[in-house]
Image (tube, rainbow, N blue to C red; front, side):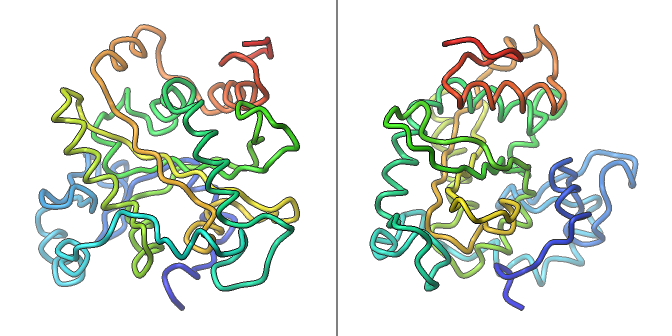
Length: 267
Protein backbone atom coordinates (compact mmCIF):
# COMPACT_ATOMS: atom_id res chain seq x y z
CA UNK A 1 0.00 0.00 0.00
CA UNK A 2 1.35 3.42 -0.95
CA UNK A 3 1.91 5.87 1.95
CA UNK A 4 -0.79 8.21 0.63
CA UNK A 5 -3.30 5.33 0.52
CA UNK A 6 -2.98 4.34 4.16
CA UNK A 7 -6.34 3.77 5.82
CA UNK A 8 -6.49 5.14 9.36
CA UNK A 9 -8.56 3.36 11.98
CA UNK A 10 -11.02 5.40 14.06
CA UNK A 11 -8.69 5.00 17.05
CA UNK A 12 -5.77 6.38 15.03
CA UNK A 13 -7.87 9.33 13.85
CA UNK A 14 -8.83 10.15 17.42
CA UNK A 15 -5.17 9.88 18.37
CA UNK A 16 -4.23 12.33 15.62
CA UNK A 17 -6.80 14.77 16.96
CA UNK A 18 -5.04 14.61 20.32
CA UNK A 19 -1.78 15.36 18.50
CA UNK A 20 0.67 12.92 20.11
CA UNK A 21 4.24 13.01 18.83
CA UNK A 22 6.02 9.67 18.58
CA UNK A 23 9.63 8.64 18.10
CA UNK A 24 10.18 7.77 14.44
CA UNK A 25 12.05 4.62 15.40
CA UNK A 26 10.37 3.03 18.44
CA UNK A 27 7.08 4.96 18.10
CA UNK A 28 6.91 5.85 21.79
CA UNK A 29 5.50 9.19 22.91
CA UNK A 30 7.28 11.70 25.15
CA UNK A 31 4.95 10.65 27.97
CA UNK A 32 5.92 7.00 27.52
CA UNK A 33 9.67 7.67 27.62
CA UNK A 34 9.36 10.31 30.31
CA UNK A 35 11.14 13.13 28.51
CA UNK A 36 10.81 15.58 25.65
CA UNK A 37 11.54 14.21 22.18
CA UNK A 38 14.27 15.79 20.08
CA UNK A 39 14.21 16.21 16.30
CA UNK A 40 16.67 15.55 13.50
CA UNK A 41 19.08 18.50 13.40
CA UNK A 42 19.20 18.45 9.60
CA UNK A 43 15.53 18.48 8.63
CA UNK A 44 13.93 19.43 11.96
CA UNK A 45 11.03 17.07 11.32
CA UNK A 46 11.81 13.52 12.48
CA UNK A 47 11.33 13.16 16.26
CA UNK A 48 13.43 10.79 18.37
CA UNK A 49 13.47 9.78 22.01
CA UNK A 50 17.20 9.02 22.08
CA UNK A 51 20.43 9.21 20.11
CA UNK A 52 20.34 5.43 19.80
CA UNK A 53 16.90 5.49 18.17
CA UNK A 54 18.07 8.19 15.78
CA UNK A 55 21.09 6.10 14.78
CA UNK A 56 18.97 2.98 14.27
CA UNK A 57 16.53 4.90 12.08
CA UNK A 58 19.09 6.71 9.95
CA UNK A 59 19.10 4.19 7.07
CA UNK A 60 15.39 4.81 6.64
CA UNK A 61 15.36 8.51 7.44
CA UNK A 62 18.30 9.60 5.27
CA UNK A 63 16.29 9.06 2.07
CA UNK A 64 13.79 11.72 3.15
CA UNK A 65 16.32 13.90 4.94
CA UNK A 66 18.51 14.35 1.87
CA UNK A 67 15.88 14.33 -0.86
CA UNK A 68 15.20 17.70 -2.47
CA UNK A 69 11.52 18.25 -3.21
CA UNK A 70 9.70 21.08 -4.91
CA UNK A 71 7.47 23.42 -2.92
CA UNK A 72 5.52 24.76 -5.88
CA UNK A 73 2.02 23.80 -6.94
CA UNK A 74 1.97 21.69 -10.06
CA UNK A 75 0.55 23.64 -12.97
CA UNK A 76 -1.25 20.53 -14.11
CA UNK A 77 -3.22 20.47 -10.86
CA UNK A 78 -5.09 23.60 -11.86
CA UNK A 79 -7.04 21.66 -14.49
CA UNK A 80 -7.78 18.54 -12.46
CA UNK A 81 -11.23 17.92 -10.97
CA UNK A 82 -11.61 18.70 -7.31
CA UNK A 83 -11.89 15.10 -6.27
CA UNK A 84 -9.35 12.31 -6.03
CA UNK A 85 -6.23 12.92 -8.10
CA UNK A 86 -6.72 11.07 -11.35
CA UNK A 87 -10.19 10.02 -10.17
CA UNK A 88 -13.73 10.98 -11.05
CA UNK A 89 -15.18 14.43 -10.89
CA UNK A 90 -17.03 15.34 -7.70
CA UNK A 91 -19.76 17.87 -8.33
CA UNK A 92 -19.07 20.65 -10.81
CA UNK A 93 -16.07 22.32 -9.18
CA UNK A 94 -12.69 22.25 -10.85
CA UNK A 95 -9.45 22.31 -8.91
CA UNK A 96 -8.62 25.75 -10.28
CA UNK A 97 -11.83 27.11 -8.79
CA UNK A 98 -11.21 25.39 -5.47
CA UNK A 99 -7.63 26.63 -5.17
CA UNK A 100 -8.74 30.16 -6.01
CA UNK A 101 -11.43 30.09 -3.32
CA UNK A 102 -9.15 28.52 -0.71
CA UNK A 103 -6.44 31.09 -1.42
CA UNK A 104 -8.82 34.04 -1.11
CA UNK A 105 -10.32 32.53 2.05
CA UNK A 106 -6.87 32.01 3.55
CA UNK A 107 -5.92 35.64 2.95
CA UNK A 108 -8.88 36.64 5.11
CA UNK A 109 -8.03 34.32 8.01
CA UNK A 110 -4.26 33.80 8.02
CA UNK A 111 -3.32 36.81 10.07
CA UNK A 112 -5.65 36.34 13.01
CA UNK A 113 -8.04 33.41 13.33
CA UNK A 114 -5.79 30.65 11.95
CA UNK A 115 -2.76 31.98 13.80
CA UNK A 116 -4.60 31.87 17.11
CA UNK A 117 -6.05 28.42 16.43
CA UNK A 118 -2.70 26.99 15.34
CA UNK A 119 -0.96 28.24 18.49
CA UNK A 120 -3.49 26.49 20.71
CA UNK A 121 -4.07 23.39 18.57
CA UNK A 122 -0.35 22.68 18.21
CA UNK A 123 0.26 23.37 21.88
CA UNK A 124 2.99 25.94 21.25
CA UNK A 125 2.56 27.52 24.67
CA UNK A 126 3.64 24.22 26.22
CA UNK A 127 6.33 23.47 23.62
CA UNK A 128 7.34 26.07 21.04
CA UNK A 129 9.33 23.41 19.15
CA UNK A 130 6.09 21.52 18.43
CA UNK A 131 5.72 23.72 15.33
CA UNK A 132 8.41 21.53 13.70
CA UNK A 133 6.74 18.21 14.41
CA UNK A 134 3.02 18.97 14.02
CA UNK A 135 0.82 20.38 11.26
CA UNK A 136 -2.71 21.71 11.66
CA UNK A 137 -5.14 20.19 9.15
CA UNK A 138 -8.54 21.70 8.28
CA UNK A 139 -11.22 19.92 6.28
CA UNK A 140 -13.59 22.50 4.78
CA UNK A 141 -16.90 22.50 2.95
CA UNK A 142 -17.82 25.23 0.46
CA UNK A 143 -20.95 27.24 1.21
CA UNK A 144 -23.09 29.16 -1.34
CA UNK A 145 -21.72 32.42 0.08
CA UNK A 146 -20.05 35.01 -2.14
CA UNK A 147 -18.28 36.55 0.86
CA UNK A 148 -14.74 35.12 1.27
CA UNK A 149 -15.15 35.29 5.05
CA UNK A 150 -17.98 32.75 4.89
CA UNK A 151 -16.82 30.69 1.90
CA UNK A 152 -16.33 27.63 4.12
CA UNK A 153 -17.68 25.82 7.14
CA UNK A 154 -15.48 23.53 9.20
CA UNK A 155 -15.99 19.81 8.57
CA UNK A 156 -13.00 18.44 10.45
CA UNK A 157 -9.85 19.61 12.20
CA UNK A 158 -6.95 17.60 13.56
CA UNK A 159 -3.23 17.79 14.15
CA UNK A 160 -1.08 15.62 11.89
CA UNK A 161 2.43 14.61 12.97
CA UNK A 162 5.03 15.72 10.45
CA UNK A 163 6.21 12.12 10.17
CA UNK A 164 2.76 11.10 8.88
CA UNK A 165 2.65 14.02 6.42
CA UNK A 166 6.06 12.96 5.18
CA UNK A 167 4.78 9.48 4.37
CA UNK A 168 1.58 10.75 2.78
CA UNK A 169 3.42 13.18 0.47
CA UNK A 170 6.41 10.92 -0.24
CA UNK A 171 5.93 10.95 -4.01
CA UNK A 172 3.74 14.03 -4.34
CA UNK A 173 4.29 17.71 -4.98
CA UNK A 174 4.01 20.19 -3.38
CA UNK A 175 5.66 18.74 -0.29
CA UNK A 176 4.55 20.28 3.04
CA UNK A 177 7.75 19.28 4.82
CA UNK A 178 9.86 21.32 2.41
CA UNK A 179 7.39 24.19 2.64
CA UNK A 180 7.62 24.18 6.44
CA UNK A 181 11.43 24.06 6.39
CA UNK A 182 11.70 26.91 3.88
CA UNK A 183 9.16 28.99 5.81
CA UNK A 184 11.07 28.43 9.06
CA UNK A 185 14.25 29.81 7.47
CA UNK A 186 12.53 32.78 5.84
CA UNK A 187 10.57 33.76 8.94
CA UNK A 188 13.67 33.66 11.11
CA UNK A 189 15.28 36.13 8.71
CA UNK A 190 12.36 38.44 9.55
CA UNK A 191 13.05 38.14 13.26
CA UNK A 192 10.45 35.48 14.02
CA UNK A 193 10.94 32.45 16.27
CA UNK A 194 10.12 30.35 13.20
CA UNK A 195 7.09 29.09 11.28
CA UNK A 196 4.18 26.69 11.60
CA UNK A 197 2.08 25.11 8.87
CA UNK A 198 -1.67 24.94 8.32
CA UNK A 199 -3.03 22.69 5.57
CA UNK A 200 -6.56 23.43 4.35
CA UNK A 201 -8.48 21.24 1.92
CA UNK A 202 -11.94 21.37 0.41
CA UNK A 203 -14.12 18.29 0.64
CA UNK A 204 -17.16 17.62 -1.50
CA UNK A 205 -20.56 17.79 0.20
CA UNK A 206 -20.92 14.01 0.01
CA UNK A 207 -17.38 13.32 1.26
CA UNK A 208 -17.73 12.33 4.90
CA UNK A 209 -14.22 11.00 5.39
CA UNK A 210 -12.02 12.49 8.14
CA UNK A 211 -9.71 15.13 6.68
CA UNK A 212 -6.63 13.01 7.38
CA UNK A 213 -8.04 10.29 5.09
CA UNK A 214 -8.35 12.83 2.26
CA UNK A 215 -4.92 14.39 2.74
CA UNK A 216 -2.60 13.55 -0.16
CA UNK A 217 -5.44 12.17 -2.28
CA UNK A 218 -6.91 15.44 -3.49
CA UNK A 219 -5.47 18.34 -5.45
CA UNK A 220 -7.85 20.79 -3.76
CA UNK A 221 -5.38 21.57 -0.98
CA UNK A 222 -3.41 24.66 0.03
CA UNK A 223 -0.44 25.00 2.39
CA UNK A 224 -0.33 28.05 4.64
CA UNK A 225 2.98 28.71 6.45
CA UNK A 226 2.41 31.17 9.28
CA UNK A 227 4.98 33.11 11.25
CA UNK A 228 5.59 32.30 14.92
CA UNK A 229 6.57 35.50 16.71
CA UNK A 230 7.57 36.33 20.27
CA UNK A 231 4.73 38.83 20.52
CA UNK A 232 2.32 35.94 19.92
CA UNK A 233 3.81 33.94 22.77
CA UNK A 234 3.64 36.92 25.12
CA UNK A 235 0.01 37.58 24.21
CA UNK A 236 -1.17 33.99 24.47
CA UNK A 237 0.70 33.38 27.71
CA UNK A 238 -1.35 36.15 29.29
CA UNK A 239 -4.62 34.33 28.48
CA UNK A 240 -3.41 30.74 28.83
CA UNK A 241 -3.75 27.59 26.74
CA UNK A 242 -7.21 27.04 25.23
CA UNK A 243 -8.52 23.46 25.50
CA UNK A 244 -9.70 21.89 22.23
CA UNK A 245 -13.46 22.46 22.76
CA UNK A 246 -12.80 26.17 23.29
CA UNK A 247 -10.61 26.92 20.27
CA UNK A 248 -12.72 24.67 18.05
CA UNK A 249 -15.93 26.51 19.01
CA UNK A 250 -14.22 29.86 18.46
CA UNK A 251 -13.00 28.69 15.05
CA UNK A 252 -16.49 27.58 14.02
CA UNK A 253 -17.96 30.94 15.04
CA UNK A 254 -15.24 32.77 13.17
CA UNK A 255 -15.88 30.82 9.95
CA UNK A 256 -19.56 31.67 10.24
CA UNK A 257 -18.57 35.31 9.88
CA UNK A 258 -18.44 36.15 13.56
CA UNK A 259 -15.75 37.12 16.02
CA UNK A 260 -13.27 34.65 17.50
CA UNK A 261 -15.31 33.93 20.62
CA UNK A 262 -17.22 31.15 22.40
CA UNK A 263 -20.57 32.80 21.66
CA UNK A 264 -21.43 33.87 18.14
CA UNK A 265 -21.40 37.61 17.67
CA UNK A 266 -20.89 39.61 14.47
CA UNK A 267 -17.27 40.53 13.79
